[in-house]
Image (cartoon, rainbow, N blue to C red; front, side, top):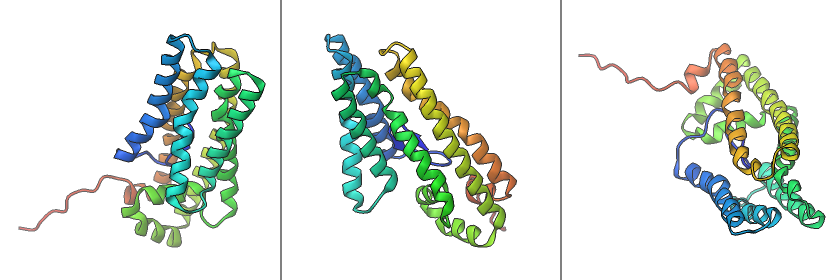
Length: 224
């Protein structure tokens, strides 16, 4: 449920202008800044700091525009600022490489903590993304125990995966050459999201509700 420094979706990010813009801000621009500055002879720490700025500004602007308390968004901004300050004070570029772990761990905590509430985070995020089917999802939540149970286990999977992702990011950031990690980061993120589609879809199919919510709509036959 994350991409770069952001929480992503629980089933799959739809192709929208906003989604494409986030890919540009969170992936393309930071990579271009880092490798462009490196080509000009700039050090790793400064080049990485330049790559953090677009995502930080974008996250802050999103929070302001929403005009509401967004725990995930706030965790992203706080984690990005904290990792940047620590990296600058410590003068260690690798501290910036692990910033996604700083973001992923709070996200894992929020995700698992949401299990204590009536509706877990993965359900809430997915419902918001599929607004046209929100009413159907709400009806299933109220009437179908297997549907509710599926979303609870989906939330557990995403929470645990976020912890594993953070550990992997830290290990790679401190074992691989610095110049390799920025390009590898989005690959790891996308691969993680793709892999997590498997338990998400399997759990919803086992609940018998996947086809009701996410299967492509079939055209209704017209009687002649």
